[in-house]
Length: 104
Image (tube, rainbow, N blue to C red):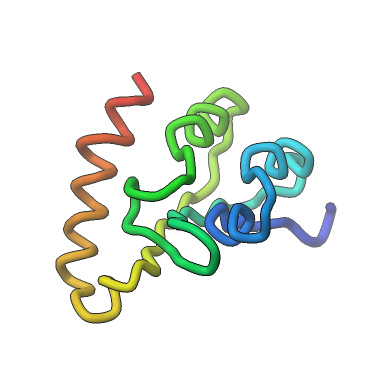
């Protein structure tokens, strides 16, 4: 832990059949950055906020433990390939309108 950290990718964790928050709690001391990505089902990612990852619960926990690192959002939904600008705007609006207000 003195020389290496862990950057959990919540979308890949859930795709691997694990609970992202449970894994993050298990390895909390190693977390150096968090990678947000939503998941729709086996090997399929969703637009942020439209999948099965509970970002509000994860983010509340990060606030609770005083996490002061970066959270990076990546959208691998199929729509992101053909319409990356539209998806980027969608994700920004989702963060602003849905995720941030839920934290208060």
